[in-house]
Image (cartoon, one colour):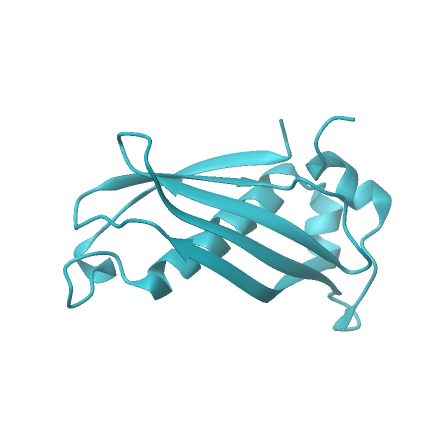
Length: 133
C-alpha cells in the first residue's frame, strides 16, 4: 500500500534531551525523514526530480517518549487527496510494545523545482500515494 510507509528509528544519545528522552525537535525531524523517504520510494523518478515538498504545518500530540537505545516504528499515511498544492500526512510513532507515543498531522505543499513556486499537485503525481478507492 503506497499510501502507507513504515520506517524504524533508534534513539541515539544525540537525540536525548536534558529530561532523558527524545527531544521534540527530533520527533519533527523524523517526521520529515519518513515523509521524504516515502516520496523517494514511491514517486516516479521524474517526479522526484521535478518537484519538492515543504512543510506548511505540523500538528503534534505527544503521548509518551523513549530513552536512548529504544527503537520506535513510524508509519506515515496519506488518507485524503490533495487540496490544491497541499496534502496532509498522518504520522504515528509506536514503541516496541505497540503503544502510540507521538501522533501528528503534517501539511505539505508541492514546489516546482524549476520555478521555486507552489503548484497544484497533479492527479497522476498524487495517485500512487492515495488509499485504494
